[in-house]
Amino acid sequence: MNSFYNRLLAICLAIVITTGCKEKNTPQQLVEKVFVVNIIPDSSKMNEYLAYHKQVWPEVEAGFKKAGYRKIAMYRFDHLLVMSITVPADADLNEMGKVAESYSPRCAEWNIMMSHYQVGVPGTLAGQTWVEAKPFYSFSNQ
Image (cartoon, rainbow, N blue to C red; front, side, top):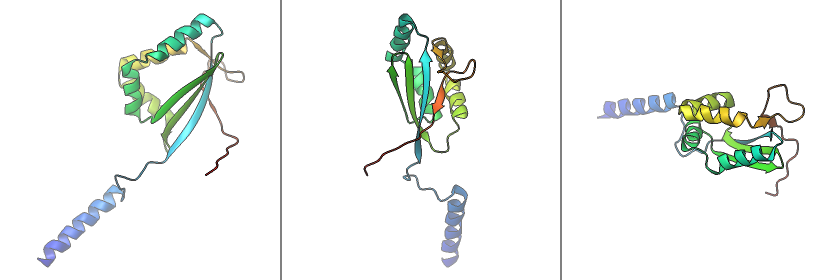
């Protein structure tokens, strides 16, 4: 009997070592990233863009889920858009974008369609649209 328990213990230890000792209920470290872009300064373009975002295609949001995005929120002031995304701390955003687009051809179609409304903010490179806004101040009352 004793050798049975020793073998069982060895198997369990091997499983723990190969799985990296991660518990299923351990919360994943998340980070928030903020991006900015301008919409072409034309009210009809802005209205079209906003209308699309009132009814984002289900395939697009399913692609976000598949890629691992936890939260996406968008804000606007005039033609300036701000997007906040919450993702795992170790996320590769380029890879996440590829995974999201691979979910359905409609995901890539959405991104191409939205890009026709977007222009970079002052200081971006030619053809560059969304750029990350880097944090420089934070306050917490915790």
